Image (cartoon, rainbow, N blue to C red; front, side, top):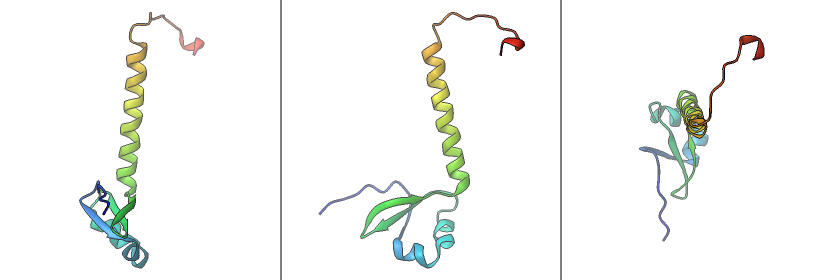
Length: 83
């Protein structure tokens, strides 16, 4: 028997999702809901606000990485016209 990690506090089956998708999303109370097929997670239903917050966080992490990579580079002064 194979076990699968479920990265959500709430889960629902595919059949339940088909019957009432919004009710399934609302069960998560703003957090992702693991959608299961034969007791294995196949995807996560993520509310729009949570997805947007996740994308913002990823962008922040990417920008922080760029800052770390450029940290030792010399700086130079530019005018607004040069931008």
